[in-house]
Image (tube, rainbow, N blue to C red; front, side, top):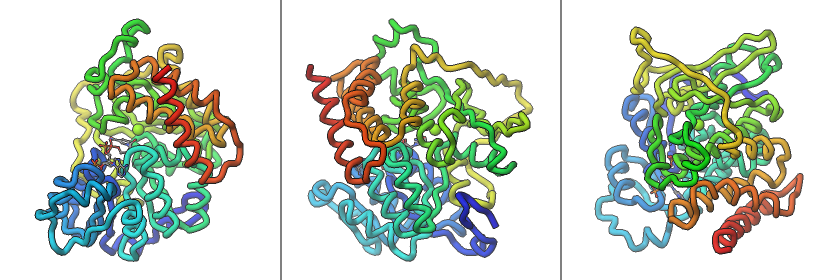
Length: 400
Ligand code: NDP
Ligand code: MG
C-alpha cells in the first residue's frame, strides 16, 4: 500500500484491472506520447476518452485507432463547422468545456491525463479532481495558478495527483527512497534551453524560429519558449512548492544541458538521489499511469556502455531573471501564481506573433505582477478574473 499526502494511492488489487484513461489534450505533444505508451500496453491500458481543440482531423484519426467511448472538441464553434465524416460511429462526440467536465466525471474513467496547455487546462483538471479521479498531471499551469486550491480539492475528494512533468516525476521517484520528513531539499534540473550560452545582447536578437528549436526536448510551442526563457523552470519551482508541500527555499535549480538527470532529492544526512533516463516523456507519463508498478516502457534506454559526460552548472540569474520570479512567486503565493502564469501565456503568445521581443517576455510578466492587487487568500473565481486581467495588461504593455 502506498501513501501520498497522507492518503492511500493504490492497493495491490489495482494492479489486476485494466486502467481506463481519458486524455485531455490528446493531439498535443504529451497527448501523443501518452497514446504511444497506451499502444505499447493495450492489454492493461484502455483509452476511454480523448479531447482536442483545433486539430479535429487528428482527433478523429486517434479515435479510429483507440476507439474511445467519448471524444470532446473543446472549441464548440470550430466543432460545429468541422466535417465529422471520419469520426468512428461508436465514439460519442461531446462539446466544449461542459463536454470535458462530463467526460472526466464518468464512472468508467480511472485516470485523467491533464495535458492541455496553459490555464485552459484548469477546468478539466479541477472537474477530474472533484470527481475523485487520479490525475496524471502534465499541465503545470494548473498548480502555478491555483496550487493550494487544487491540492486542497484533491485532499477533500480523495483524488490523487501524480506528476508527469519529468522533473517532478524524478523527485517523486527519488522521494520514495526515504521518509518525507527527512527530505532536506530538491534540486530541479534545467537543460538551459537553446540560449544557455547566449550573451545578453544575443538574447535580445533571438528569433521565434531559434526559440522553438530546443536542444534536447521535443515539446509543444508554449513550453518550448518557456524553456528558452527559463520561465518553465520558474513554473516548475512553483509547481513543486505545491505538489510536494515544500518551502520555497527547499527548491533549487541546477543547469544540466544533457537532460539525463531529471532532478535530485537531498535527504537530511546529505545523501542525494537522482532519477536518470534519456530525455523522452514516455517514461514519466507511463510511471504516472502504472504507479506504483513499473512496466516495460517504449522509451529510449540509457546506454551506460557508451562514454558520456553529465555537466552541471548554476543558472545565470541575470541573463535568465525568470528563475528569480519563480522563487519570489513561490514565496508570496496568493494571487501571484495566477498573474505570473497568465502574463507569461500572453507574453509568449505575443512573442510567437511577433509583437514582443524575446527579452521583453519576462519584464512584461514582472510589470504585470508588480501592478496587480495582491490577495493572500483568493477564491478560485478571483484567480480566474485575474487570469483575464493579466492577459489584458500584457496586451496594454505591448501597445505602449
Ligand atoms: P501542445 O501545444 O503540444 O498540446 C496542447 C494540447 O492542448 C493540444 O491537444 C491542444 O489541442 C490542447 N489545447 C490547446 N488549447 C486548448 C484550449 N483552449 N482548450 C482545450 N484544449 C486546448 O502542448 P504540450 O503537449 O507540449 O504541453 C501540454 C502540457 O504539458 C503543458 O501544460 C506543458 O507545460 C506540460 N508539459 C509538457 C511537456 C512536453 O514534453 N511537451 C513536458 C512537461 C510538461 P489542439 O492541438 O487540438 O489544438
Ligand atoms: Mg519539466
